[in-house]
Image (cartoon, rainbow, N blue to C red; front, side):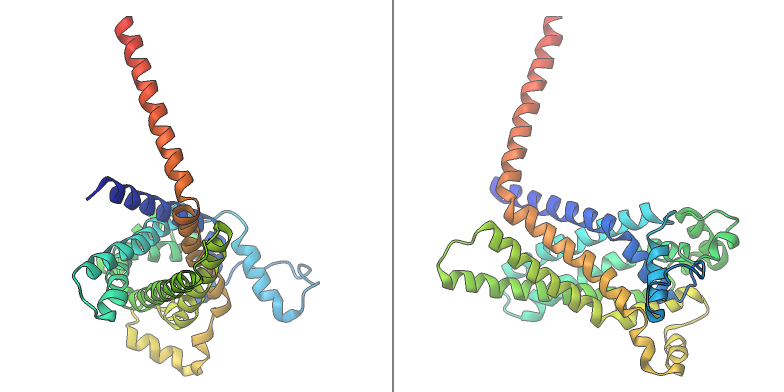
Length: 324
């Protein structure tokens, strides 16, 4: 691997990591609202006099978001940490694996465009499942009482393990894979497809692309990828969280119970999901492009300056020690 290739890979990795961390931290309240809505948890009731200025049809959603954005925030460190490594691994890992597959010379579009995202996101979902399960359990208002008034991620993991064993930590993995893998496959395929179209359009124009144009194109690509991934996988979110609520339910039993009330369950929490899923995915893609492509040269130059300063300080300290 050449030094320039190594430098590019490093920039891509740290761009993905930074973008994923920022997106996870900013969007935690939205994730919390989505988790509560999909699980059917009932947040603490607000005073009857609150939000009377809103139409009655909007008060429940407004109350949910107000609860989700009001501290304390159970599971915050675990959710942000888990989402950061997960999204970084999925987006950066999928790009790396995609390039590897392309280098084999295959022209199979499924192998090039779908298989990398499918493989990496499946791996991440299985590894992350206990954290996902525990942090969603923490959003249940009744869990604090059931766990001895201690609502931490560690307490949630212990609670799940003590009641259901090791298998309980991975209960709902099938629904989790059904939800997460298609979401990221769709998002990455849409991102790459639109990115290729934008690249062709830029080449056909023959004009240099400004940083502003690059940022706008990235925003278009990011929004399309996030929205498509969120809307198409909303039913799987509901299925997974229903399985989390009852450890005795298998996937077929969960589907049977949900279908008793008709197909409307597929839309449960879709508005929250559209925000909680589309926003962080779009933010991650957009910020990654921003750090890597729009401001990549400035970041590289800043890194080189930092390295030179560090080497100079090291020499000064070494000389001072030898002089002493």
